[in-house]
Image 1: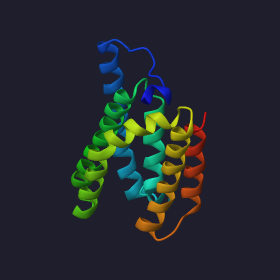
Image 2 (image 1 turned 90 degrees about the vertical axis):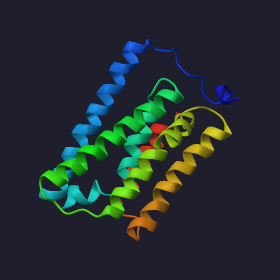
Image 3 (image 1 turned 30 degrees about the vertical axis):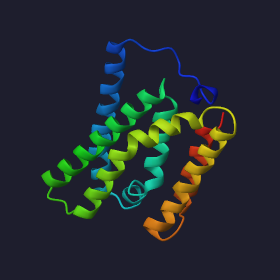
Image 4 (image 1 turned 180 degrees about the vertical axis):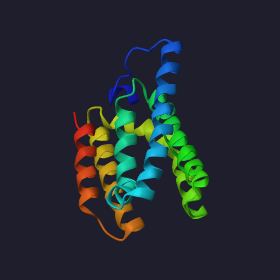
Length: 169
């Protein structure tokens, strides 16, 4: 049934899949350090990268450009896990304060990210289900901005548009 929405590309060899996934995890590891440094040394970039809309955009891009929904799930999880690991290790190493509430929240996000990425992969497909998934992702991005940050910011609108662009064929 799901293949009517979007057909997976040809399977890539296992060794290449492992290399791609390790590269994506390395990007997550580097991103975690970079984002923590932005939190410490910049005001605006630190604020933007603290918003959920950025991560929904990045994870959506990773998911839809993966070759299969399973690869999307693996890639997004490895990126998120790597990013969180180095973000909090950098915070700990630099004696930068952080809240355990955020650690738990982002950990839950990372644990659910494979399921979300699996379904996000199908948003790039065709038909009503694909359009509903795309609309749902963009709406959730904006609703989370209100729930977590009390309002929709300009950067949230920018990332909502960018997310819609990568999800729409």
